[in-house]
Image (tube, rainbow, N blue to C red; front, top):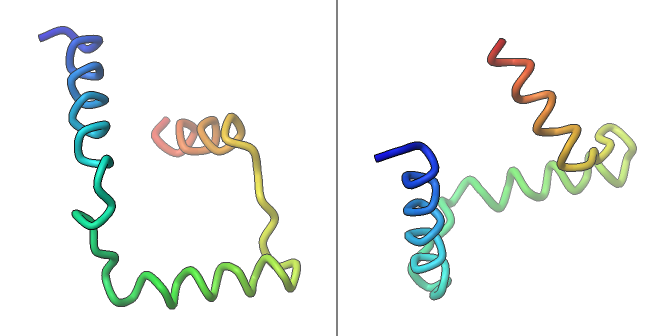
Length: 63
């Protein structure tokens, strides 16, 4: 399969899996992490970035 075909297949699988949110159970630690991150945002210790910047930063880590 080409990369494009693989990505298309992944998108189709994700679209199918994400139709029913009851299929996904968050792990117990997830709520605590979310609370900590929300508190960090409120307190100004974290600043949101746009998706394009986030992708660029992630790609830079791989380089």
